Length: 204
Image (cartoon, rainbow, N blue to C red; front, side, top):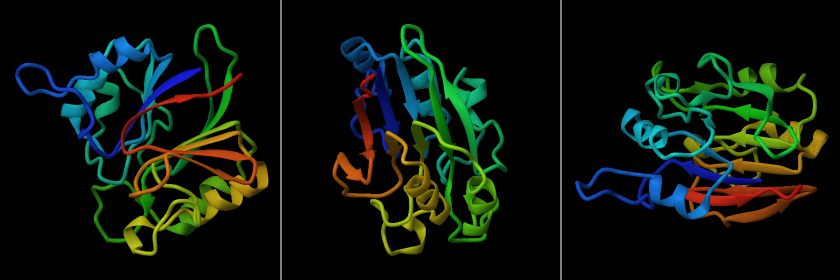
């Protein structure tokens, strides 16, 4: 399964002749099975995703996403509720077996802003601690201690770390933080970090 994943910045995205972001060249080159967004984009970026030509487009919101831009652009919101930190589900793509997923949005609350997608560690715990296993984690913010940082805006999610250590998913894909290796390993889990865009292959 090939996923074209975008996160946090369009600095690596192609532009058309009028200077507008376009993902069509990447989709035409890589032929991904799906386009996945990890958030921190705007409606302008969502329009580029919607017109990219990917067979399926889905994702989660990042903390800086102040608009519900996914549904209006035909992008599947893997959580479906900005007030809910996380949701278990299933990714079904033609020609591939279904993958169980854990989708997590936003980041740990570091300011009182009510427009951004922010949750306290306790809110993440209430949403994640009781959830069962999944093979693939699609999250804006990483787990605590995995590619996170010490500053309040980029600390990882404690409950997600507990969940990963307990359930050992095969893959975890995240954005949000800076200057991390594109691929690393945490226990039994392949961790993929994306800033801009990346093509990620999930073996059968």
